[in-house]
Image (tube, rainbow, N blue to C red; front, side, top):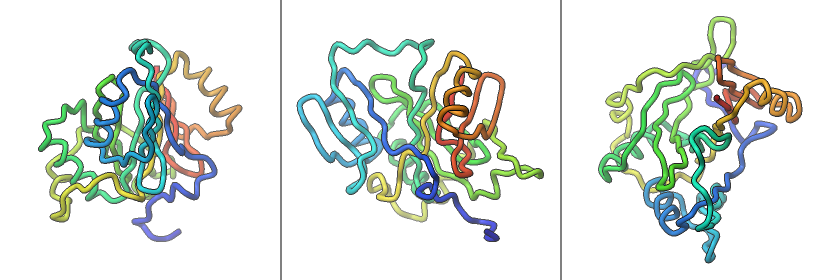
Length: 223
């Protein structure tokens, strides 16, 4: 590949996140959030279960359980589900959409490999909405994937909305990665790297990023 602006093709990765299932206490309230805030389509709705996604692809299953206990901050489990938008303009349009709706946000970061916005659903499940940069931008002089957490240039992002408004989660969007809370990164390595065979792409103290097929990460875990 010689094109200096090429983007990663998630569909070509040997392993990727197809969908995420969340157990929630108030099914209707959480469903409304993912439909109205993220623009996911409701594909199926039962008394205690709902499926959301694009018009053709399920991405998120919500299982209603009013007796479910809230996840503790220091328990192993979900840190966030990351929804990947294909072009950068979609992220700009979505950011204007949530700003207009006064949706509370938790952060906005430039990770070198991507530009990301963070928020939580009504029950505290973490969400990242992000867009990738071209693959060559990910790499340092030695060809290794590099990541960091720097402030996002929000004004620069918003300037790239191409004059259009947000009209719902795009058909070619997907779940780019899932980030987990783990108790021990060495134990996480022994499972995700050694058993599942996913490469450790970035290794920071207290955090691991696991990628398949050359992606910066389809999974991550931090203490």
